[in-house]
Length: 241
Image 1 (spheres, rainbow, N blue to C red):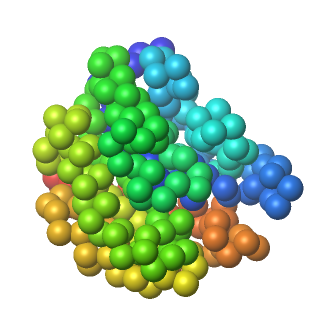
Image 2 (cartoon, one colour):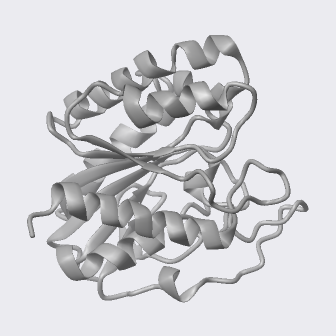
């Protein structure tokens, strides 16, 4: 498989980034993949769990990577299909971990260190250039006032750390403002929408996208819509016309 000249995108955060579209309460995925999320073996690739090999990407993108959890449709493939005509071949680097708070993405913590390892491996493999971090996380930080209070500081530090550790000081970041959460949802959303005071960081607002019965995970339809929203934001802000 030709792994050259891809535009590489890191997919990170918690379960809504790893994908729960079509996964029911019994943790069974229905196997339904919308057309917008379909595979394209010639243009869309995934860095595999071994950190070395590129393979044709297909939903569920995070299966085998998100702590052995059952994954379903995510925003990733819809994003890749929506940008491929503008950017060419796409390399996706799935790194999301369900149930993680922002403090779990500090330097030295396994989710963060795994992200850096995988991103470096993706670039070192001759696969192309890392173009952006797509970040969807924060539901866990809406549970307590203490976690919500430090969300801004810890998210900004995460972005600075990733940029430094990947030697990409201007790496674009497209983050998602949550559509779901608990008591401190609005506090975290406000930080995501307007509180991150770093350059090359943009936000897409997922509020209003349909949710599963648990009122935390978004539906298959929502994952597709979000992937297209992320693509439009990335193309608008970071790709010359």
